Each structure stands twice: as C-alpha cells, then as structure tokens.
Length: 395
Ligand SMILES: NC(=O)c1ccc[n+]([C@@H]2O[C@H](COP(=O)([O-])OP(=O)(O)OC[C@H]3O[C@@H](n4cnc5c(N)ncnc54)[C@H](O)[C@@H]3O)[C@@H](O)[C@H]2O)c1
Image (cartoon, rainbow, N blue to C red; front, side):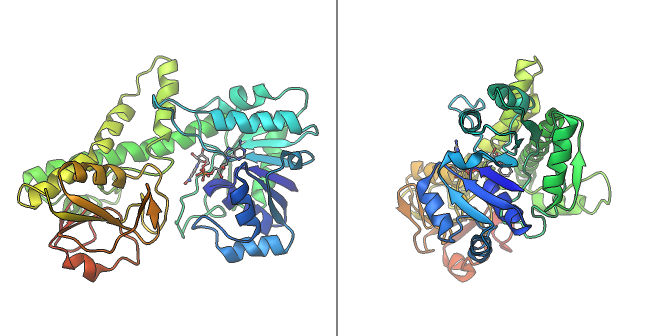
C-alpha cells in the first residue's frame, strides 16, 4: 500500500519504518524540515529505530521523509501520529491533531483510510478528525499506539493492536494494513472503545504508580523497606501486579493521558477522583526525594555539591519530556546546594550540559546501563530513587 505517516516522532517513525520494512511504500511527513533532512540522511532520532534499519528502508526505496503535504494525496492509508499534550490549564491540547486533520482536508482529494494513532479521549476520531474533513469519502479508524520506547521485548510487531473503525469497511482496511506488520489485531466495536482503552491503560499505570509511591512513603515512616514489601507481595501468583516507586512519572504518556480522561469525565459530569489524586501524589514525589536527601545529609544541603544522575524519565532512553529530574534539580537548588547533572544519553538539556559524575551527594533519578557505579559510590552520600544500588538510602 502507499502509506503516509503524519508526524515522524517516536510513534510515527516507528510505524513508518515497520510498515516500510514489510513492503509498503511509505512517506514520513513532518513539519520539521531539519528532522526530515536528518531522517533522509539515514539518521534516526529515537532509540527504538537504529540508523541501519532506517538506512535499509531508505536504500530499498520503501521510505522517504518529506515536508511537502502534497505527498499525502493518492495514499491508500494516512496515519496521524502527532503530539497530544496538555495546555497550561492541564486540559487537552488538540491543536496538532487539528493541524494534521486540516492538512488532510486541504490536500487529500482521493479517498483513503485515515487512522489516528495519537492518544486522545474517546470521540476524537469522530468529532475532531472525521467531522473536520468534508467532500471526500474517506474511511476512518482509530488504532492507538502502545509503543514503549526502549522496550526490547514488546515492539510494534508483538504488541497486540487495537482497531476500532467508523464503518466495517474502515475496520477491514485497517486490519489489512496493520495485519501486514503486527502479529495480533484486536477489533473493538467502535473507535471510541479503542481510544478509551488506550487512556484507561495509561490511567491504570498512573494510579498504580501513585499508590506505590504513597506506600513507599508510608513504609519508610514505619521503618519498613517498601521495596522488600512490594517484592514479598509480588510472590502472590494472582490478584497482585508489581509497580515500583520512583521520583515521579515522566514521558509523553503517564503524566498526560489520564488528564484527557479526566477532561471528558468532567464534560459528562463524572468526577475522575483517582486521576486527580494520583497526579497530586506523583507530582509531589520530587519534593519527597529532596526532603529525604536533606534528612539523609544531616539536615542541610546548603553549600554542598549535588550531582543528579540520569535525567531522562526512564532508563536507557534520552527522552526528557515531563521528567521528574527537572523538579528534583530545581528543589535541590532551592535548598542552597550547587547542583549539576550527569547523563551521557541526554548530553544537553535546559541550556546546561551533562557534568562529570562527582559531588558531595549523588541523587540517582534514572539508572542507564552505562552509568559509572564506582564514581557514583565515590560520592559522599548516595540517594537512590531506582532501588538498584544495594545498601544505598533511597525510595
Ligand atoms: N512516545 C510514546 O511512547 C508514545 C506511546 C504511545 C502513544 N503515544 C502518542 O502518540 C502521539 C505522538 O507522540 P510521539 O511521542 O511520537 O510525539 P513526538 O513529539 O516524538 O513526535 C511528533 C512529531 O509530530 C510532528 N508534528 C507536529 N505537528 C505536525 C503536523 N501538523 N504535521 C506533521 N507533523 C507534525 C513533530 O514535528 C514531531 O516530529 C501522541 O499522541 C502520544 O501521546 C506516544
């Protein structure tokens, strides 16, 4: 099939390369010209897609990135994979989805299957995408992306793919397309079910992470190891699922998607109380980390050098979106410490560069595989947010 993917970020590039590798003719459309040039030079900007994989589909002629929206016309399938952030009031910001939709409305005159993979609340495909496009008989389906960047076990192929279409013909076409590179397709009765399933999955994680973060604080105050308790509880073979505490949540999904559900819940008059409370608990974790660091350093860190180790939001990826490391650093600075950060994967961030791993105090926020554990241990006091440094103070 001739396929266009709108948005060449984590989600869009992954789908583009997977679809191209399975024989489709794919154009990766993005509004960012620098990114498009980089991709056409065979340089991937995301961890899950290697330069070799990208270069392979470019060399075979199956993939090309482009900034020209006229390439969208004549495609069999057009996938929308653009950001769905929150606005300043923490409400859904669908401006990127609207912009992508308006491009389709303007440039695509021959009927296509239009799929939305961007995460959003139920009703987005029908009311915010299909309703904005008139005059052409497109097919519409929702297939929310579930990619977990950096996860080597579960990728596009192996992760079951949800599909909800506005018509049986849309479902059939979407199944044909995704079935060509995904092992398992799960058809649901409507796009709204597919959309809701995705945000419910991420809300489930958000709420459970908040629960375990709160529990870690209770356990510490009781003088019990929270992580040992969680490991012990995890031996129950049914009715329990392990989540681990940490310095907060980051990335494009867990801190953001539940607020999309809370937004529509509010519109229909149902209070999303768990989401609100979970956000409060997770957003307060950096302050808890700093409180513990201060307590563990004799009651004051003023004038001390603190190195925050690992600033991306999860191990072995360079993604710093919504990372709790930002608040940890800011709050440590408010306590009068001289704070640097060390993260070889991130390199540059917030106008600062990664510094050497040394200081009076080290706060391990995210542990990448390559971190120098000897240098970490050489810091006077180590506070471990990851539960991976034996004997260290931490959560
Ligand atoms: N990153 C993840 O782990 C993940 C997982 C599942 C779902 N999602 C969802 O997928 C969607 C995309 O997320 P992402 O992480 O790929 O975002 P991203 O920020 O990595 O990439 C988005 C890309 O879209 C481009 N873009 C923005 N507006 C555009 C437009 N009008 N036309 C063309 N390109 C445009 C940007 O330049 C950028 O390259 C979001 O809804 C997100 O919630 C993300």
